[in-house]
Image (cartoon, rainbow, N blue to C red):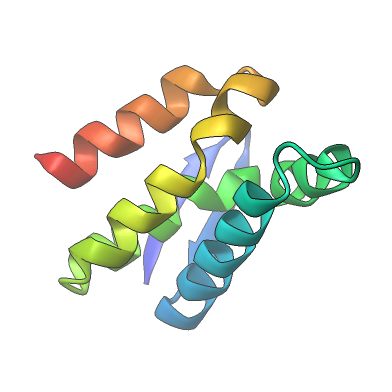
Amino acid sequence: MIAYAAAFTIALVDAPAAHELLNLAEEASRHAYERDAADWTERLDARASELRPAVETLVAAGDHLAALRLVAALRVYAQDSGRADVVRSLADHVLS
């Protein structure tokens, strides 16, 4: 597991939780232009502190494809939530 400190909280994300977040992000991406888009944004916001640890867990496990899928699924969320810099840094981490 990877630990990540942000705003005095530590998010621990194991591989199953990272894949769960991937599934959530991909589902949210499919709803990005639907009437319920705000609901999906809220679901991702609730787990925002887990984004970097999830990517780090996937990369550490050698599952680069899943890490890339997660970052790609966050593209609209990144813009809508004002987290474009965070998601861009996640993409840089996966591609480095």
